Length: 337
Image (cartoon, rainbow, N blue to C red):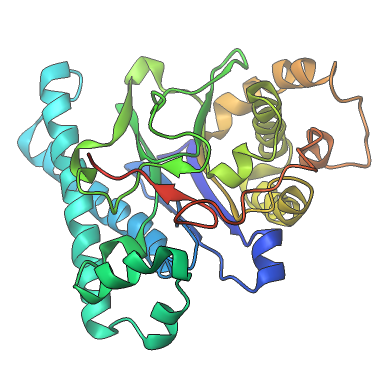
């Protein structure tokens, strides 16, 4: 597509650097002449879920692969996403294919490299039942991860998500909003996950018809969201990020974002942070004045700062993720009843 472009950045969290824990976040992006795609995933990242970094990487890769197949199928069959009943069925099929492919990738990884004694011995004694489950062949949870992705074509757009994190769209008038419905099962240190038994039914989605596709869609893992005290401050960050892309273009904007994320995790959540998204640059440039006006009351003009730096709100510097939450140091998946 001519106007839309995608980006994706992931950064190891400050707390993970200190503890020598590999980054559990993954992200992916893809653009061609027909559509743009962006995805983020956040592995649960504890000694119980010791392969969730692989799980998150599998998740974004499976999402891209399945979306490609899904869009080809729409073209071949002439399916109509504007028909709500048909759309619900098609989205269910897409999501089930993602979950199925993810399980297949996890199974292949486990068969190629079974759990080592070192991995199993790293599970804390109070959670020894995980070791028992894994030894019994129930290894899926070790790869547990969230997933969120967005797709935009010339005719429609949509987002799908399981787990926590945020999907934030910005409209032509600068309004920021979250198009994907909230999941009440995601709270505190609990999240829904691709590893849970009912993952094939646990997704949420948002659909945009051609006339309602927003010019900007951002995806962020909970490390981004938890770096800000409120939703409005989070929206302020995303507006500032949009302004950065508007001023400097996709390549330089992404470079500035990559340089900013380590500072975000250091001053904010301490968790791994991922930000990905899809932007219509032509429409975004038309919004530049609106974005500047909306940011001006909070952030004075500072010519020598980048827009990302200027848009930074004071993160929750004293707030750190729970280090010893039940069943996980960072996140605990919501299990099926």
